[in-house]
Image 1: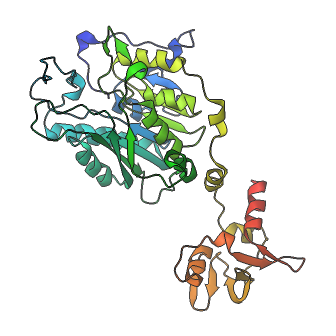
Image 2: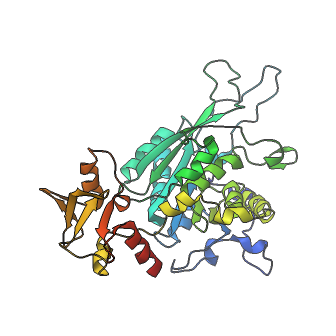
Image 3: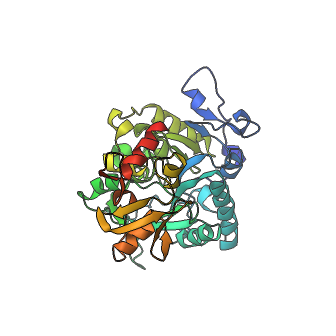
Length: 394
C-alpha cells in the first residue's frame, strides 16, 4: 500500500550509485525524461500516479495492486485480555470519505490502464471496505473482469468486539485491459495448485506470518504485508518468464521478491522510503529459481505461442483460395477457402473455428486440429502442420 507520508517522517530518496544494491532505488529525476525507456528491476520512490505517468505507454504485461483499503477505523481495538490489537491505523490508509477515495482510485487505476499492454491484465486486492468501489471504477475505465478470487484466510483476526462476523477473506479482482485483450492464462500451471484439477476461484492460504513477516523493533514493519504464496499464484498463472510485472503500491516488496524468484522482470513504486529500503534488502536476498525460468507446462507454452492467423497460410502460398478442406478426414464434409481466409460450407461463411463448431453441433472446435488438406503426396494432412511451418520461419 502507498499513501502520503508526512514531510517530517520522510527520508531523502536514494539515487543510483556505484553500489548495485543502492542502484535498485530510484526517484523520478532518475527516470528517462521523455518516458521512452522502461526502468526494470527497480523501486521508484515516488507517488504512484506520478511514477506511472512517467513510464512508457502500453509497456507492462501484468499489474498487481494492493491499494489502501480506507478501513475507516473509528476506535482502537482490544483483545479480551485487554491487550491492544495491532490494527491497520497507518496514515496512508486514512484517505477520507467515499468521494475522496473514489477520486484517488480513479487516478491510480487510470494510470495503471495507460501503462498496461493491450493484452495485459491487472489484479487488484481489497476488502469489503473498498473492493466494490474499485470494481466499478475498473469497469467504467473499460477493463474486462475475468474473475473475482476469494482469498480465504486460514488464520484470520477475530472480531474482538463481537458485533459482526469474523472477516476471514479478501477479494482479488482479475481483469484484462479490455474486452478484446488476449490475456495470459497458464491454465495447466494453475492446475498444479489444485491437484491437477482446474483451479477454483477460492484460494485458502494463511496470512503472512513468522519468518516471512518483516519486523522492526519487534513489531510488524508493514501492517498489510501479503504472503508470498498469494503472489506466486498470481504471477504463475497470469504471466510468463521475462514478462514485466508492475506493483504501484510496493510496500515491503512481496511482488518484487516473487517476481525475481520466478524470473519475471518487475517495477515497484513505493512512496515511503522506509518500506522501499526494506524491500530493497529483501529482494537482494532472493535467489532466482533455475527451474522457474522455463517452468511453464508444455501445454501452456503452446497456448502462449505467437498466434498465426489462418490467412497467413494463403499469403505464403501454402494453401490457395478455392481449395477444399475436409473436416476430420470426412470427405463428405468439405469447405471451400475464401480469398480472405474464411471458409464457406454451404451457405455458412466463417473462420476455421466457427465452421468447425457448426459441424460439431455447436461444440467448441479448434479448427487447427480438425481441418485437413490434400498434401502434394496425395495424403490428407492436418492444417496445423502448415501453421507450425509458418511459425518456424518467424
